[in-house]
Amino acid sequence: MICKSALVIALALFPCAILCQTEGGTLPAETPLALSIDDHLPMRTGQSVSAHLRYPIYANDKLLLPKDTVVTGSVVELRSDRSRRIRATMGGDFTPFKIPVVHFTSFVLPDGTTIPFTSDNATDGAPIFRAVPSPPAKGGFLRQQLNGLLTVVRSDVAIFTAPEKGDRFVQFIYTQIPYHPQRIDKGTAWTVELSHSVEIPAEPAPPVVAADPPKKHHFWEEPVPPANPANTDTGSWIVQANLDEPLSSETSKEGETIKATVAEPIFNPDHTIAIPQGSTLIGSVTRAKPARKFGRTGVLTFNFRQLQIPHEETRIVETKLTGADSPRDIALNSEGQAKSKPQDKITLPILLALMASQPLDQGDHDHGLSSGGGGNMLGKNAVGGAAGLGLVGTIISLTGISSNAAAGIGYYGAARAFYYRWIAKGQKIDFAKNTRIVVETTPRNSAPMKSDPQI
Image 1 (cartoon, helix red, strand yellow):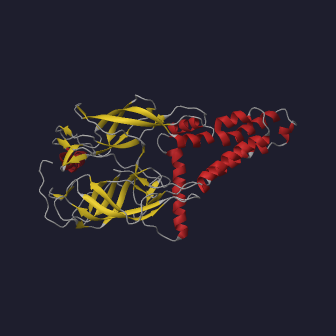
Image 2 (cartoon, rainbow, N blue to C red; image 1 turned 180 degrees about the horizontal axis):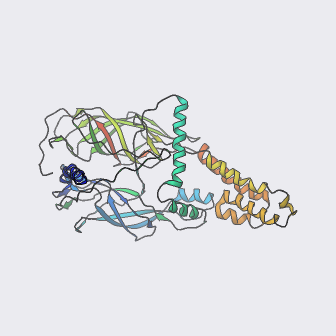
């Protein structure tokens, strides 16, 4: 029985393996490369960087570089992160935060062959996640508020239950120290463009690897983004594309024309080409609202209504945004509208306020009526100072300042947390140039294009 199951899995994965083999060809200039790293790296000039391709790379409808191909480079510059430094300094952290500038220089193929290339420098790297639309909202206002609260609770619980919680604890301790080491975090991603064309040799298909069995999902965990459904002949195609220009809730205007380039060819069941790689989706911004004060986040909605295929007439299509690469705190609703996820605006300010109140709760022992009163007073002062300025506040509070002064430091921290969550401008919605998006669209109604059966 086990042998039969293994045979079925192998046969199911065999067509995928055939499609993953590469024939070799030329990667044209300006081809975008979406890259990310799998390990934490020191923040220093000259640090070597080994990243991998987040998506396969096609040219002329042929697979040239499979997903996870290794790309190497190094950190060539560290730029000052001024906005982060100012905000950190206000919280007692005087670390001179930097932004790494990375220059990628070569592909490393599975057989060890190194293919050099030239590209622009990679800046503004950040962890990237796939945002997918949430299910259509059910129920009334109270149900929607409950769903938002559940999202907040899941985010809070994930701090203590998600993988690498030990590392997160260490990083939290670091943030309490006024000067601490900085690193390039695991999962940081960049997108760069080739400056010149590159010749890629043919490569055999990678070995077939069975997928891991699904893990049990708990209600307090974030929903796992579904895998992109396969293209079918039932009336819709799942199209992977890259935005040609950046989009932002702050600068984009309603009615603004936008374009996205199809990154991977779409095949019919008989392996003829339905939508060639390099085709263009044409659409517009349907709603753009900038972030505003009092925590009101930006809103951005866009869709595509035309499909432009090289050497053919432009086709009218119906599309729906079903995925987009973005920071973790960006979400899509059931209509494909991008906005910020609900944020926890209550827990941290209340916790800091409770810590700040400790120096004021001295009791009789703290007035000399007990031999242990002085130590208890200093301990509560330290708690209050930590709430405002971390380790710096703790040290100041242990120098013998009054309870009122220690509480004042703590309430300063609570007020700062309240300001950033309730009064400051909310989060803007940004999609950089070459952001990978996924749209569901109807297939074009025309004669299929013949493709090389070896692809």
